[in-house]
Image 1 (tube, rainbow, N blue to C red):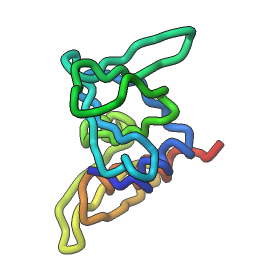
Image 2: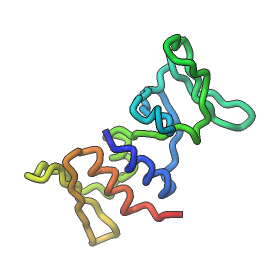
Image 3: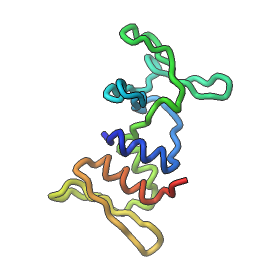
Image 4: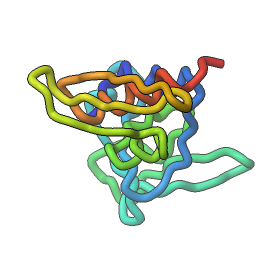
Length: 134
């Protein structure tokens, strides 16, 4: 799973999240970033009220949460979602002594690699190099 810092960097670089079942996230508040939530039609659903996306906590008796706005949540993209963000720029993934190396095309004819001990973090670092900061 990517780190909270990498997730914040993705948001800061302009990566947009359209919540869907199966997505995982944390509530970006000091006491809640240690608790990972998953969107599910059974417990956490995406609602739209007044043009804003809300994450509704349904049937969670152990939490005093009803809903949070999307800007209070921090998306923790999965490996497949990060690969999707790289798209056809992805050239190769291989295991190295230092972790996982992700090789991707920065532009036609020019490839670059990033390495991280965690595969999802390596993908996230690659996405960050391709996403201009707003």
